[in-house]
Length: 411
Length: 228
Image 1: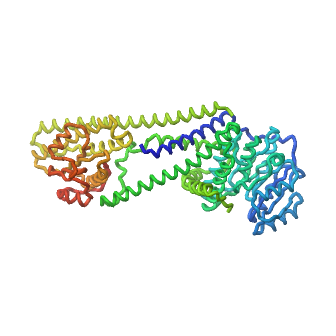
Image 2: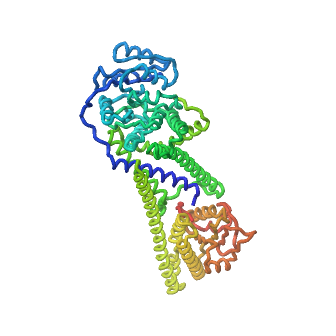
Image 3: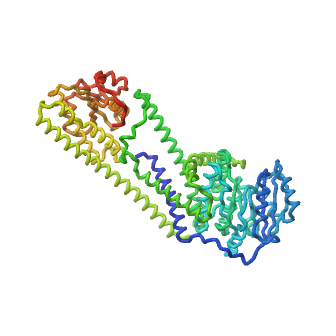
């Protein structure tokens, strides 16, 4: 037996374990259905829109916030321009001039976390939300979040269900499937009290969070991940409101996607290093015992599997070419006439891969059922055909970046 | 946090692994059964050919030469055995037993072919090919590729392949009769072409074509795959 294949079996075991765990969690507590119930009380909300060169989408983002089904006097929008060099500032000032519910702040470029912190300091509402300027919210999203917060005073922050905004291209369709999978596993992480990130698009915090644990940090350009780690470290509860939908634009080029995911993945590694004491520490519940270790193992497993597959494919191709060269046999295709079931690969590994594949499909289907995402059959084809080729690139880049302690760039 | 959930997830994951192992094993068993079934058919075919030979003698050479070929079935078994070997290992007792049986069929077919060609005056072109998959013959796989290609190109060519290391007395006798002796000078693969003295070492396609001038007498066809 190929000794290196043991690494693949280990990766498959951990992948299956992770998915089985999520399914157990699903059957223990199924996601509730959206209701028409209204909150008992409408707390004041400051929605922060940090932006840097977002002239294309800023107005639409703010419009979606103003269109939220929420009492007007309870909701303010704070646009924080982090030293944009395009027309973002002009657009933001114009929006603020037209609508008194909008506050516009311009500052020198200092990074997203500085824009968020300035917005938090300048606002006074009970709840502080963040909406990246490339995302748009569903009209009832805030009400759904407030209902979640109302359910338990111990809940300190809420994440939404994120969907891809109008997935049209191959790359967008691929990410739409991935986000749908994300909707499922984030809800299951919620069941396990182990959400690992408070994403930029429409995460809402009680103001007390910042009083208790401080403001956002640079955190290797993943401030939304670090604050989730810090909240777990301080025992603050995060939940996922799967009925609160937010639509986000996703990278349209492979280069852009790799850059974005390298930042996320590297952020995970570097924040993991900063919070390494939480790994396998029962004090931090499922977050320390399951989500962090399995997240890291998925990272290592992804790189290993890609490396192994690449090595095997290259070896096979090289062997075939050198065989043809050495034997002098003219290149020819094998004839399918003699092909029977006998020659189909039916090794144990194949069945395990099929099991992982089926569970992934089931997870995506559940994510789709939870949030009614826009998926087509071809989206699955793109996802399963492309993701495995692109993801190892950002995983490898992130690993190198983390080893060199070099922060990944935003753009 | 409940440890019970961790344990249940582990048990279910282990069960999935166990099921995958079980299904793969069952399919491997089905493969072995498939080979065994084909070998039983071959056994009957050989017996039938031998009986037919004894009944007809040299009275009806056309019928004899038409019905004496087990080449296709043997080739089919060869490639199936190759898959079974790579899945279950070449030292698997069942694989070894099937391989021994296969080798015996090949020897019987070879002997029958000899008898028919002598009685009927036909001139078949055949190769006894001796290989090893114990790691001491790095070129055997390539030699197998060359022979497969030749067999695809010349359907009339008979290739009898034998694992040199197989512990089978009939095979050892054949090796001795055909003077196949592997030593420091004579390395596997070895080829005995139409009962001439053995040729040792890897030969590429052109080399094999030079070694078998009789190929020119055989008709060619479109290639089909019957890998060793």
